[in-house]
Image 1 (spheres, rainbow, N blue to C red):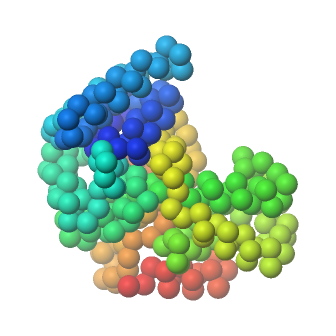
Image 2 (cartoon, rainbow, N blue to C red):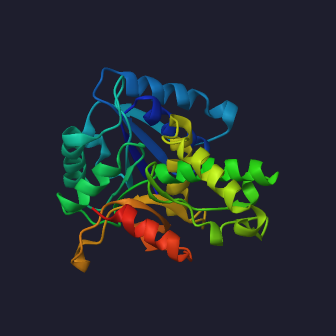
Image 3 (spheres, rainbow, N blue to C red):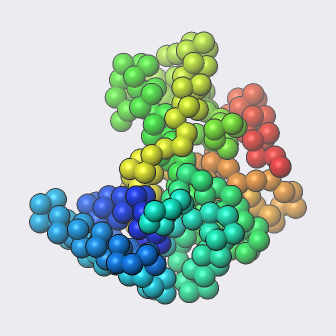
Length: 280
């Protein structure tokens, strides 16, 4: 993977550029924002940290959205002094990017961009494998940290996904979640799991740095440097004839986007909760 373009040099966009650069996962990053020279300034600031933090990623800034042309991945972040790209403005930007980069993967990094993923697939008819959101992975990371505290363990030892539409329709598949190889449904009793779920729900939306780390982890998986599954906002499959809505699902990634949706084993109650979450 050669180039990643980040549209929006706000707090989230700058954080994605910094985290991704530090991981040396791609060859170059272009930070784009139409507001003055903010993008160029942030790119220069991050680049000057390269000798200290020991990364070699090339960074540049631009005010021209057409600079995203030729990128392997385009990340939709947030504008300087503004919110995430969303609503009609976000859809217009998504359309512009899709027209310029017919083969690029478009990653929506913001916590409020689930609807943008949905509209991109349902209204612009973009492939659902090529337009998706990484915010659920940041949320899942926070959930793993909460669970690790509950079992007095390390988040690295916790395997857990989040599904559905957070925060109101969150589904945690406890039956197949584990901590250090131990099933969480056995390690934690039902009242404790209910309390944990309530605490996890209150963590939505994740902050900019968590979102940036999740977006960078997703891009790393796309480059092949990681084989981990990621929880992402995935648009509905419109070919099935049924209309559902975009929801968080665990996916396997490749250079061309979503390679496979890998649903965990769900109990009857969890399956019903997920079906209800995805229902319009």
